[in-house]
Amino acid sequence: MQTSRFGEISIDENLIFTFVEPILGYDEYSKYILIEYEENSVFKWLQCIEDPDLALPVASPAMFKIDYQFEIPDEKAEKLDLTSAESVISLNVVTIPNNNPQLSTINLVAPIVINANNRLALQLILPDSSDYEVRHRLFTGKPEPETVLVTETELD
Image 1 (cartoon, rainbow, N blue to C red):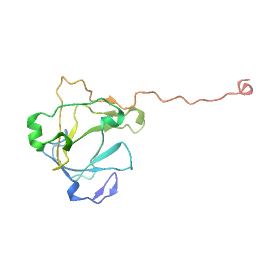
Image 2: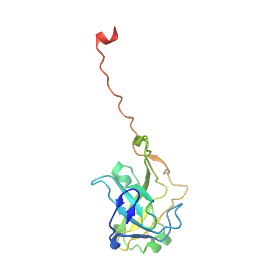
Image 3: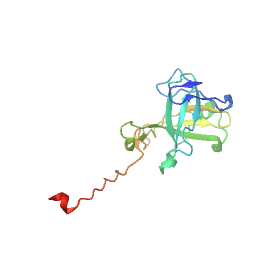
């Protein structure tokens, strides 16, 4: 498959996820694959099979030491045919600004939930009562300012 972001990629049919409920804003697409673009990166890409221009950066909040837990309602678990917690893969969509990656955020209100056993997936929208944010900052520290050494002769 030729993608706009990754060029030509080969797709293993056994690794395609089928969304039984669509990702918000992408109702017409249901087939995705997870791509590890850079080895050992905390970020992965959810590449749409039906639209080669659609790829969403995703990550696990645990990789950023974010305390994050949610319950999957029974009706959603049934749609995914979940039988054990061990088969659940949970990822969250990340926004990485081009001009300032330090301002990257992760959407904790709408996790992507995947059943690893049958590759069924959905985006779960947590209730309004959750303590999570749509735009939770990944990097809370401010970048260190550059240190510039000035000699006395430069001050004169």
